[in-house]
Image 1 (cartoon, rainbow, N blue to C red):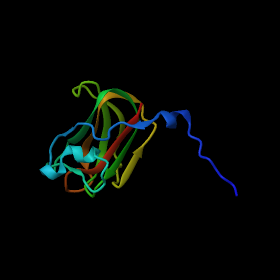
Image 2 (cartoon, one colour):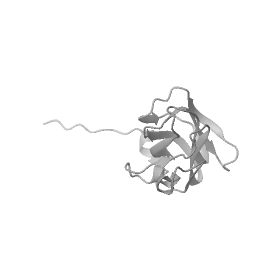
Image 3 (cartoon, helix red, strand yellow):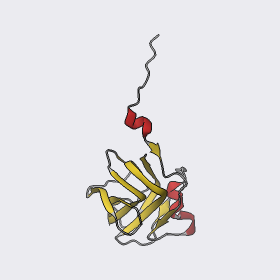
Image 4 (cartoon, one colour):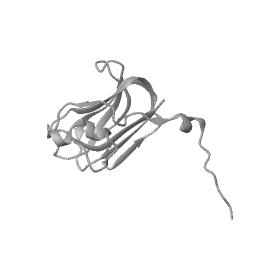
Length: 144
């Protein structure tokens, strides 16, 4: 019998989920049951939904202190972002874009190889993929 061991790289070993159960805010909320905290609760049966069926809309997490961001995973509900940015900030006022796309197609977006530092991380949607708003089951932020 052969046993194979998975070896993690130093980067993978150091990377951790930073966003679970952290304080979250958003540009709008469809209803109380779909608040921004639902996208960071680790429960894939809950979700954040924007009230406004207009652009732009955003969802952000407060990591508590500046962190090095290396990866963001977005788990979209039917209402997804076609064009959006992942941004970081130290003060939630001045933002730096670490990722952007104009070809979002919903489902899961696993954004790796990101490089940015910030206390706050947000998904900033500028074009919806459907006639509805934006909706995320989970937004996971990884880094050190």
